[in-house]
Amino acid sequence: MTRLTRRPRRGPSFVGKPPRATADSAPPSEYDAFAAVYDFEYDELVEDIPFYRDLATEAGGPVLELGAGTGRVLIPVAAAGVEIVGLDASPAMLAVAREKVAGLPPDVQARISLVEGDMRSFDLGEARFGLVYIPFRAFLHMLTVEDQLSALAAIWRSLRPGGRLALAFFDPRLDLIAARTTARATTPFIERVTPLLDGARVVQWAAPRYDPLRQILDAEFIYDRLDADGRLVERVHRHLMLRWIYRYEAEHLFARAGFTTEALYGGFDGRPFESEGDEQVWVLRRPESRA
Image 1 (cartoon, helix red, strand yellow):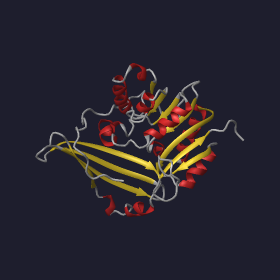
Image 2 (image 1 turned 60 degrees about the horizontal axis):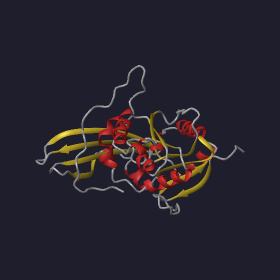
Image 3 (image 1 turned 45 degrees about the vertical axis):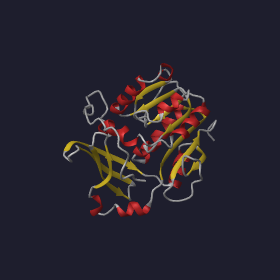
Image 4 (image 1 turned 135 degrees about the vertical axis):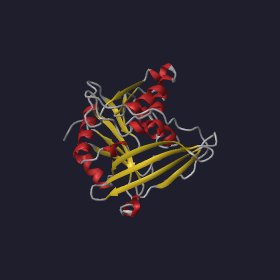
């Protein structure tokens, strides 16, 4: 679902550069360059928040969010009274989250811990969670089966026996994939235009490329801030790679990692999964003991 125009808003803060890697640090995350515009891009994405919040409330805490980003889901979960740990690989995204958390009431701040780490290899010591959830498309950044299984193994270790894993990602539409596999299809197009309150606007360009053999979406995004006279003021580039997953492929992947499927929904309202193009919303459970 692509929105070509949006209501007038304040502009994103196109300032700062992503932190550079040192000999003692991990390479920059592809999300570091996106941190300045992430909330501008996704602040209207709210339909998944009640779903994860309700699961977290039912689990009773503590819960773990992987791919916590700038706190889009994490903060509402904590505000609902749940103790939560948020893990993300991007220092820049976590910096935005920490700034937002600092402005929350003290009791909500006290329920939030933010940790930099890799979904594939994180180790939070003796902590065990009743719920781990991965919102939006974060799990699709696992670009190989080895990465996927490593992440699922780390999640397994972090869950209490009987604990749940919830995650969601788009269900691939083969017609859209086929339409973007030709050389001509790599030409950038305007995905949306957002008017700003000062009369300026942000134009977002997209150039997605699909590799059906590897199931890889390789996309370039450009955010142009134009002033009221249409002159380019600033530009931000973002590169994104995802590996899409088909329904039955996901089912076998989760079973291979030892999880049982509690539910598969076609949306965050709990409707049944029925057709290509629905959202895949999975609720899995770590069994009390391995068979």
